[in-house]
Length: 57
Ligand SMILES: [Zn+2]
Image (cartoon, rainbow, N blue to C red; front, top):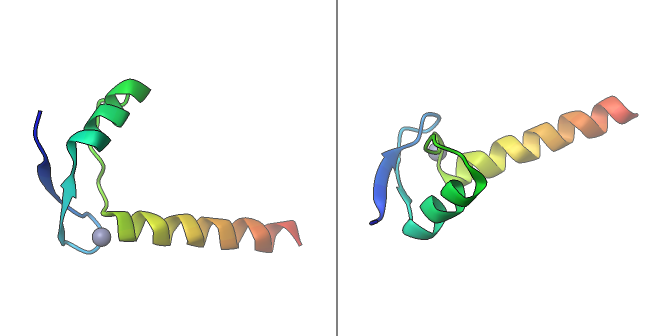
C-alpha cells in the first residue's frame, strides 16, 4: 500500500489518504475513500455539533 492523493469534495484541495488511514478504513470495513480533507471533515463535524447543541436547547 502507499499514500494516495485525493481531491477534497468541499474545498477542491488535494489531501493525502495515508497508508495508516487506509488501513484504518479497511479495518473498519469501509470500502469507500474519504471525500473530504481533514480540515473540511473537522468543519462539518463542528457544524453538526453546533446544530445538535442548538436543537437540544
Ligand atoms: Zn477540504
